[in-house]
Length: 217
Length: 217
DNA sequence: CTATTTGAACTGACTGGTCAGTTTAGTTAG
DNA sequence: CTAACTAAACTGACCAGTCAGTTCAAATAG
Image (cartoon, rainbow over all chains, first blue to last red; front, top):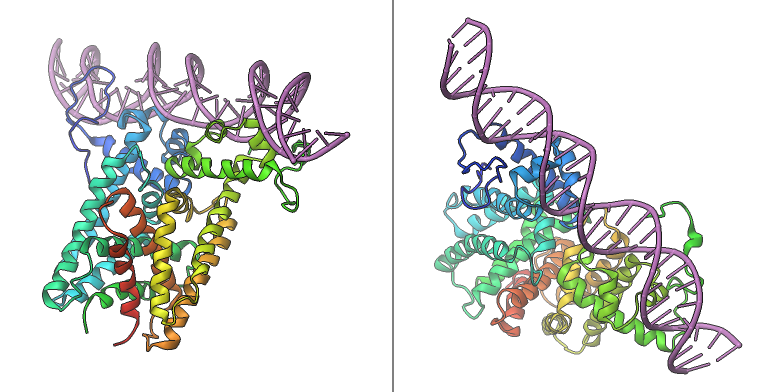
């Protein structure tokens, strides 16, 4: 959750010509956190283009200038927001990576973690699916990178299954990873948006059907 | 959104695309078609909020006034665009509904049709996933309705499988439909956006893994 | 210990531009 | 003759980004 700002280029644009090292990130961290939370909520609901910087600032209890002080632009804020969310999700997935001895159980645990993450950050998945796959996306590089990190975790879990069980080798792993990630996001979103009565376990079982079809019987 | 007063009288003196779509159209149909194609492309790429009415009109080779003559508003245009796309997709899915005697083959055919549809209308899936699942969506009702129509077709195919084969009854059908639809969209979009080298057949096989896991062996 | 200074963090009015939707007067085609 | 369309100007709202000024905790000086 920390995800302290990568000391690289997009640091605060200090107006007084400061060289920009984080000497005293006292208030700043709390402010960034509030901005992340506020913008995750708003952007998740209405889309990146549908939310104004003024709204984000107001929701975070901060002035508009502060947004531009902490992030260089609206676009930068969103890029860092995406990274922030994926870091949280990855942290949760990796937290149980190897808790179970059986790779299918491990996979099930991972899917469960993903569903819980979507319960806790319902807006992140919305933001993800709304802005991913845009062709000349402003955040195309960010998405490609983050997507790869998520797929890598799924790939690890699938590999573990393939090592322990006989599986259908004719199925392309890449497509299988994509199908799994897609099912996770869409089942989670559908549950939130249209079918809140569906349980966590039902959703996990439906997604795990993919794995059961992958393993030969 | 502006003119929030109940001033319904602000509509054009002509029949804005509200009710009558009967024996009207001479040029209108061609114009609407061009507008559908142009806006599908643009909105699919940059999102509903990221495209201006002027751009759509220009891309369709039509004046801005024509957009407002045929559709009452940008929002209306998009709602009708969604319906238009789903109608095409449903038409294709139903065209092979019952071509195969084996329900698993029928399902595979349907998934294949869906992949072909996404090849032909690559922007529609983008529009769908970017605007679906928005919480207070302007087109929430439209989405709920269209989503139900798509799920009904998938449900029919799953039911046919469940009638002919022994299946895992502990899996909630609703979640299974959602997982299938999600996998279809995401695998298709991923192929277009990030992995164009993946074949149609690889993608179908990955999605069909869900069905193979549903059927008991 | 008190006074002064420093500068990172923050403020909010303002600017320049964009865009949905309207209007009007005229043109084209069925 | 009339529905469909054009072209261009206009409005009113809205919004990303800017910038001159303010705050305040910590550093430093006296």
